Length: 86
Image (cartoon, rainbow, N blue to C red):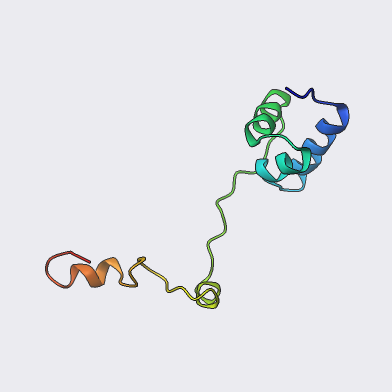
């Protein structure tokens, strides 16, 4: 286990203040996400817990994907066939 230096703690605090995720700070420090999360908890450092950004329909189209179900059919369309099957 690698000991935490004052510089590591400063990076952790700065990352949290900048809105970075545990994983992003961990990558910068060469530590695991769990190590960063645990240290932040022990120090009382709060990381913003935000949901991952959901791509817009334009972004999905640019990636060549359709919205809805992986089959390209929505749940509503599947249920309208009378069997509720894909």
